[in-house]
Length: 219
Ligand SMILES: N[C@@H](CCC(=O)N[C@@H](CS)C(=O)NCC(=O)O)C(=O)O
Image 1 (cartoon, protein in one colour):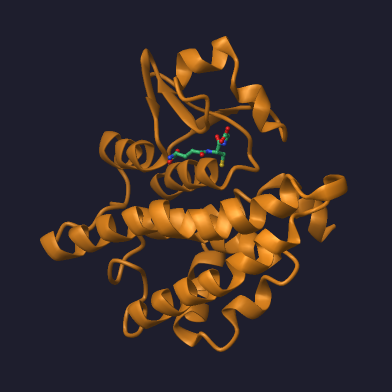
Image 2 (image 1 turned 180 degrees about the vertical axis):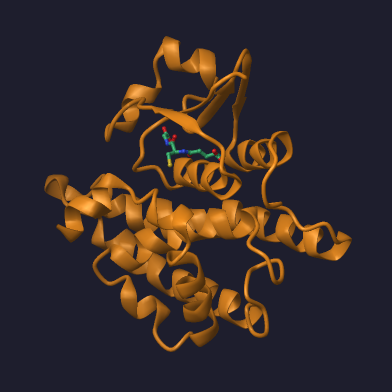
């Protein structure tokens, strides 16, 4: 049986989704570091052979190479036995796909690129975080959290009663947002989102894949 290898940095929230999918399915994998904490290392000819856009994560399984986190998570779900990470029902599956798309297109931009990444890879004057960009992102993040909270009213997970790829995509993002300065108030009073968060953070797949950057911060 070929080995599953996940290429990238354990600090990447996208890569964590791929690792969580493996953990949920009980799939053994090797984590092969690429780029460490320094994302510019991804723009090498060697890495572009795996990911032509020079990003992470990448999955290799035997001679098969795959990029894009949601494609990787779907592949892991469908290639291996174990609990399904995609609902069987038509509407629940469509709902999962809706959230995967919304997370990738709206939430990642506000929460990761304009908030978390501004602390992790400061781009402001004197190498400090760009506070104007961070402050501008906060109302959008709060609005998106309120949308999530309303959707989670009466639901355990984003696509219904069972955890799905959409939840595995969102949890690593929420973890980073909540760990940044000014992040926790963006979740204040959102009880449905809080319940969902508790359900996610207590999963073994979440506990086993914490990014080293947050582990160092907590220590
Ligand atoms: N749409 C891609 C996004 C991947 C992505 O942007 N990964 C980040 C790390 S979390 C990255 O590689 N950034 C490097 C860059 O933008 O140059 C996916 O779903 O995998």
